[in-house]
Image (cartoon, rainbow, N blue to C red; front, side, top):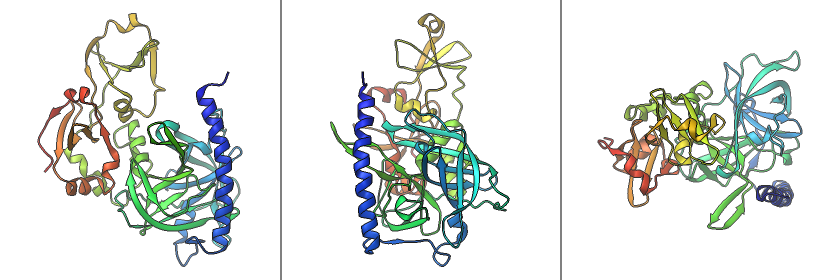
Length: 399
């Protein structure tokens, strides 16, 4: 008997095959006739180090693109769906190709293994970190190229998508456009993103990484109405937020900022403190997750939104019996992770969660929000239901 999820996946696959054909056909026609602002990368327009930092990725029978984000350790960022088949099985290794400056085709190849990944269709999280392991031939790159991030881009800024789309027959390609919006962790752009570009780089005019091309499966455009969206550019901050669920500023181990001080500036307004859970647990009959503390108390995550600001997934949650849980005295609800912007439906003000106790600091105007979090700040505000707002307390406004 097919589950609803299986039916939806089959429906998506059918629709996606049709959409891919249409995209491939129209893109090929438009490129041939000069109707898209598309240009192949050349040494005259883009530094070769930037060309080489955007790589060809092949895992199993799946091909896509990726972005080198760490020179010293050989980390690259791509999409998780390039690693996974429909059974979510991981390949033993992947193949990464760096372009040749003459042909713009992959020439120097490395093996790579996965380090971290998340594939959450419902929340449009489709990210993976790979690590280069060894070169496949004698020729290798002496100094690995990489891109720095810049997550403070603005609407109407120019943007380029650099990847290995199927329409370009294995060659690297740039499509140019502008940023039209920054919403819900998505950088909206009129630059063309087509099949094969998954994991490719969204680059600003300073050649900094501002997002990666990602295949978005389903998005609810209105209650009960779903629209298939093939490709979007995911804001780099969405990936940074995911990486930081592994620890305080954990993203710094993988990602290099174009302006470190500017990005980490907001940290002066909040403190990070570990939850200090001896175990994450839930019972078979309940979906709620508890943080069991060494002192014999238990804190509860009131909803999945709160939980996902602290942890990347539910893999670390243990299932226990009610009797095993009973000795732990219920203390309080856990609040959203410090450093997160929040609001409630009945209050137009936006607050910064400043500590583990849920102290809120009001950001008094949009100019301050833009200064601290960039023009796309509103896309990262978490909604707190009125019923949970009593878990928080008011602090001094951000000055």
